[in-house]
Image (cartoon, rainbow, N blue to C red; front, side, top):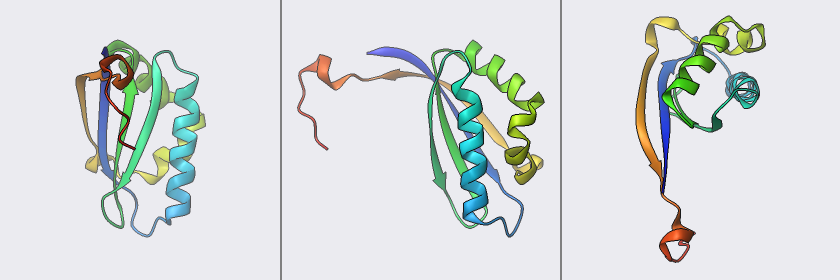
Length: 110
């Protein structure tokens, strides 16, 4: 078991944003974060036509905070930022743990 940090962001995209454009924006965001200290990946969920939730995994809250600040000022993520309706953004940071099944001698279920 290892400690980590989860950043959960929910937001709406501009009405009429096509799924392809949304996914391209998420890929650009992921690409940017891959160059940042402590980033371990992202999961994306489409809640409804214009509503999305991202779960990002970080080594620490400090890593998340520094990378988020850089992301907001980066031109590399402008395509993503232009799609998001700012007033709809809800962001929460949670401490968490990575449960390593191998170290617990449990069978892999899937």
